[in-house]
Length: 170
Length: 180
Image (cartoon, rainbow over all chains, first blue to last red; front, side, top):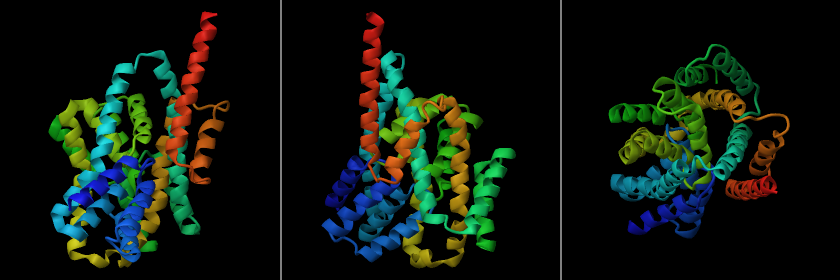
């Protein structure tokens, strides 16, 4: 169990770029290197993780931990994925707060802000690739975009509304 | 204050559907608009920092926001709150509902949820682009990054590292020009 914890710490430490890159690395560790789950079981867990609230990587970690060692395992695996990045993030936040007023640091962040727009767009493209070949998705997108832009509907209402629309017409 | 933070992040965690990025619009609403804990610019910087760190981006932003609002305790409260809904739902599913993935209704709901999430991210993204000074002259830069990551499958880590190195070099050379 400790070994599994270490594996998740490793995944949390070396996966950059959020959810999907974490899943790729998890698959490598869990299925290929350690044989803790079969490829089928893993695919099933990912499908469920995508349909459950919360970040996909966290959901997958919780699920895999539970499959192997129950609730204690899921707590350990979730904690393992979060731990390294939280430490890095605290260091980054502290650095940001101390260097905020330095000119060269502001230059870096000016570029990073632009970059982060590009990276969010990239993540959107990846979702679109997996979901948009059909007319229904396009229509929902246009309506949702208009409703959010024009009437400033709260994100939570929008998500609940979309879920209901999907259940009826999807 | 800590309780308010905790409940806000439970809400944020519970409505993160279809992956971590869906957290951004909900979090922005809670943190910048409703409670005004951070300015929009501080929040954008948090996203930039979160992308430069390993691990789940949504959790990283939670660490940043929690830490800035209430220090170390804020961090723990924010992370716990955002993880709790997904933790509870996964454990319940794993224990009782293994065939959840085959539930037609849930799949149908996601058919509409995915495009809705895209539009939910797109709207603040347009606002954000204005705030960070995106214009026709620098539009190539985020576009190039987007193509490299989404179509060429280059890890965002390299894109971020190259950006930082170039930014440092440019600001150093500007400094020299200023001295001469």
